[in-house]
Image (cartoon, rainbow, N blue to C red; front, side, top):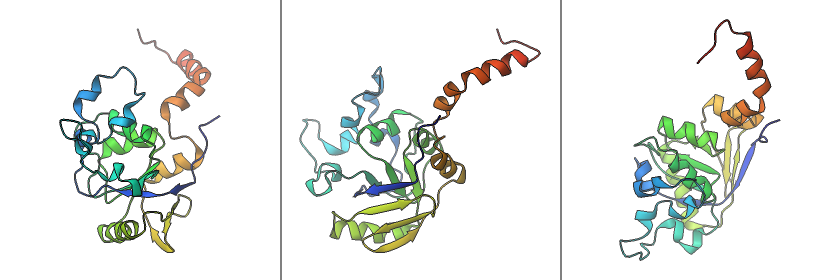
Amino acid sequence: MNLGAIKKISGRIVPIVGDDIDTDRIIPARYLKCVTFDGLGEFVFYDERFDKNGKSLNHPIDNPKYKGANIILSGNNFGCGSSREHAPQAIKRAGFDAIIAESFAEIFLGNATTLGIVCITIPEEKIDEIKSIVEANPEAECHIDLENKTLNIDGKNYSFEIKETNRQAFLTGTYDSLFELLQNKDKVIKLEKSLPYRFV
């Protein structure tokens, strides 16, 4: 049993432009005190979306023309900074299924993949092209094909890169290592009993 293969992601894009968008921008540190991740999605990019009085700063996520978008478009080194799992958790719980960027911070990438967030990379000039398409037509449907490593939007096709182990994990539905471990509990116990030593 697995979580189900992820072969394609379809939906609309919201552009959150800029390089080095770190985890503190994605989810401010004061929200790390939560006992569970439930409800964390409403605070994604909170300090960039609202001022200290709670007034909207017209962040793209709150722009009506991008309402319902489930794919983020960003720049280089997305998810850098402290290795807080809350960042991809907030993104996932805000309804995002994929992120397109020039590159990702490695720890963020691993955490996002485990949650089933598809992270793909495209060169900067192609990011700019896609951004222009989305800004001109926010309703444009984006289709990410993991089997063929292609992205289609508004009739244009782009090739993308994705870590091969992540791609295979999505295609086989084995991207959540904890889920896989729990599903194979009997095998783990059997292996433990076969070892010539015990952990205490």
